[in-house]
Length: 272
Image (cartoon, rainbow, N blue to C red; front, side, top):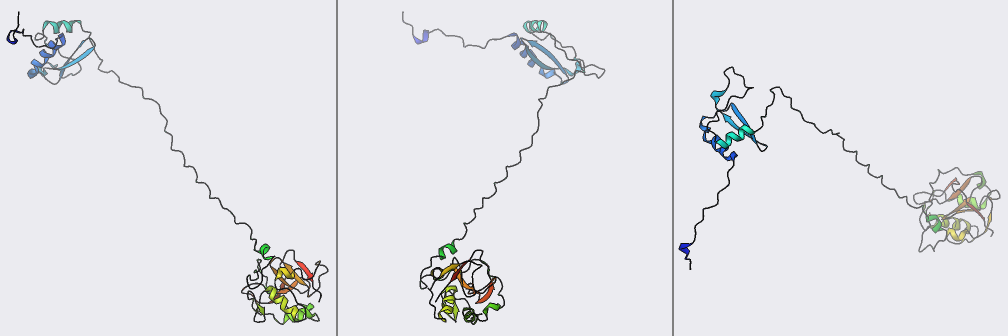
């Protein structure tokens, strides 16, 4: 047998299932027009708590709000009334205290920031200019090294000058300015001054202080005599006896008698 589309069976559309709670809700919403704001009914079914407003006229006449008024359940369906009859009664005392446990916590201030590291200061190595000046180049390429130490104030002409040929010649040039590379009375550097003084006595000295260090033989300080050369790396002068010398100090200074400032000078005896 062939079934045409017009002959196919027609089925009822699926409907949502209903429960006693649906009837209860329908009954409650059907009477909302007469519901007041001051009353409530509590019903529980299967652990579900439902609330609905009750007629304001049902409130107690003494003004008390602690007691719930009676509820007219005649409008409810039989299933809703059965649900109310079997539901547990929930009541709360008027003076019930409500409380909750607050977790304990401790407020800790933010830690102090770490101090910034101190900057690292790298000290410059000690100057080696005096050591390099020990081996000097010819005057036309390298000028005399200036004295590294601070020069003391000029001293008075020492008594050893009188009768000492070297010192008498050297004393003539007190006040002549220091000139780098200078070898004449218009300006001297340290080795230019000593070589010029000795040349007036017919003694030829090498040009640089490093070379003059080897122009004679070394004597001790105790045995040194006025007129001997007094040498330290990078500088040379003429010993004037006691604690004195005469030399061309450095740029900006002049030929002068002054105290020996070197910590461990070398004394050189020059023989003609």
